[in-house]
Image: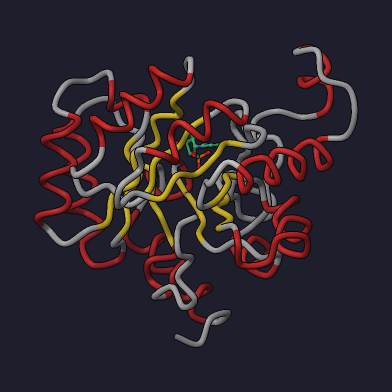
Length: 238
Ligand code: C5P
């Protein structure tokens, strides 16, 4: 099992999702954000754009942390081999999906990376789950999946701010909770359904938050990110 950092440097708690179509645009956004952000998530969109690993190297050279949000999902052997390929590149976090065997395969090969299991996407609600064949409450499923992730050797989970406190009260610091679906109260939800604001996410137990559009689409992205950092600084003392 990975070691959970007891004290996360508070400016690292904001992870900005570089959800842009090209590496050139990603670099522009990072330049614009300057010192406001030190942890970036590069996900599916950039993984299909070309230059994904060059961008990761560029971010690392600038002293940023990088989260590879590739949401790996395949048979265990294929996931195991894919994770082995990703190891050693300097990624801090990597996401996987799936059952115990898939998560165990990822955890076995993780090296220096922390493996985060996707519980239930923050864009899904109860009726979406029913459409996919799952019965029951979203919160219950998230908790069950978090337990499975821990048993499989994952370091943390991706979960909404609505489930963070349940996960923390059941599993404490054994699992990192990384929370996307962050929206200012009354803000545009886009395709997200299980959203909370920055303060709610951290007060509910999120260790990290992932923010995409509220920063990317702000008139002044650096000011938006600094606003989030200020809220974070009001919650964590160091
Ligand atoms: O723009 P927004 O803040 O909604 O972006 C959220 C980011 O977090 C996106 O990059 C999305 O892929 C990611 N994510 C998510 N829900 C999950 C896992 C990842 O929204 N469960």
